[in-house]
Length: 169
Image (tube, rainbow, N blue to C red; front, side):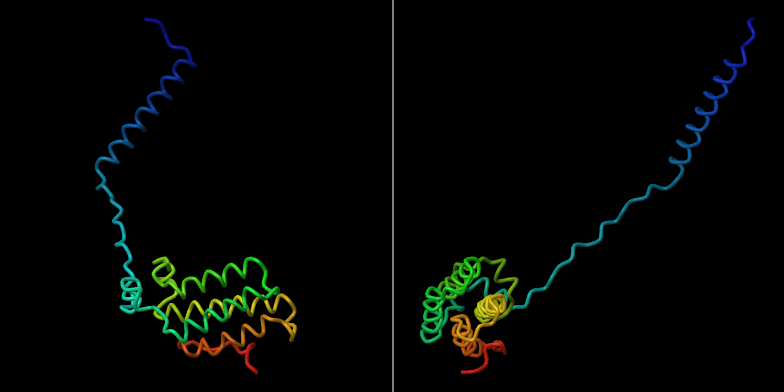
């Protein structure tokens, strides 16, 4: 029988070591109890019943004639006001459209703006106008100030707080 060289013995020892290690690892994995990750239960958000009612019955959101007339007056002022940037003017027009036709308000918007969607839409209009006015340097003769002062009473009618920057005559 031929004797093994040192190199051959080294490789045989290495192979034996790797095989032994593999057997030990396999045996230890089989003896251990399997571990399972228990998924956490899905989070469920309870919606305010008023929000659900708003989504399900958008006709109930329709503004009365006087309030809708005030919105239309503001819409005309927005059309005639050169101080709005194009993006803000488009945002204002979108809110006016939704105020006039609540059945076109996307459900995700209704869910996001809460219990008083018509009031919140007008808050959005006031905010767009106030931001644009600030960006323009708050000129006292701006049509934005006139529009903001028309929006404030509408906010009160719709149960929201007026913006202080538009207080005054």
